[in-house]
Length: 404
Image (cartoon, rainbow, N blue to C red; front, side, top):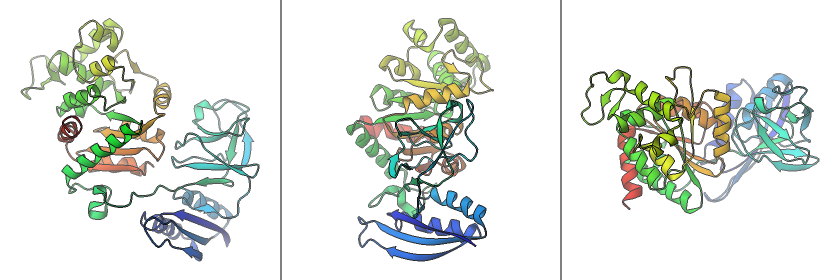
């Protein structure tokens, strides 16, 4: 059998990291032996465990070690990372190291160099000055040096917050039975802490934010300076503008909750008019759009990215029809973001989660429990789910932030 000694260190007991590592080993049909254990005596102390992992052959062991790295289990005996030069634009070298969003370091010339911008599903680019960055596939240029294999790569596991924490209620990260009042208060508290520390708050919004009547509350958060960056799609921006210009969302009156005559075409009419002005900002300046989330973003200079999809009507002139360009625009705005609110969004939330470092506190709010778990399933392990109506959540969050 092939074997390797690995080590996992940190708050690995209360964060359940060690348990996850052992589960992964056994689920792969491999075996392990504990070689050394140093358990911290208090919850402020870190712990360290060394394991010898045994698998059927070298290939199975390599695959297992790669999977274990996601949980912060690293090889004890390391060499410098292997660097291979890309031979063409847009193509990573064979066997490239595929990144997670966890803090990552690369061993170069005997020294560990931290990756500057952890992001999942990228390659590890080593520049001429031996700086390390993640690079998405489309950014690869012939001659770039990339890490190949997992030798000489070290990741740090994501640790669960310790101490009093409403998100630990019922010992699960997602539940429809958690006390919503405590959760909203805790999210508001974390947003305040982030803003006090100079961090930025990102909101990722789906069209249901408007349909549920939460649009005015999100607009109040933007107006109050609590949201610094907005990511959404054509649908969200369109229905936000529709609700403020025509008083409907998908043709349904936002005041009375009933359909209006010819309302099915209302969203197309506002798209058409904004296209006539040339941009959302121009429509705001002309007075056509005089309220709502997009209005407040323009008025306060809050940057936004509207990523397009194949089902978009129009779309609005500000929408990125090229998804690669949309992702790059999102990457450009992420530095400084320390809290992300995913509000009733699936596709845009997952797209954003793919770009966020694990250290960004991420709260996913949706009435559908499957939506809030999907983000974590896709690799955004830092995401905490709140299963509730986004309209009620946003209203309560507004009250917490704007009236206290």
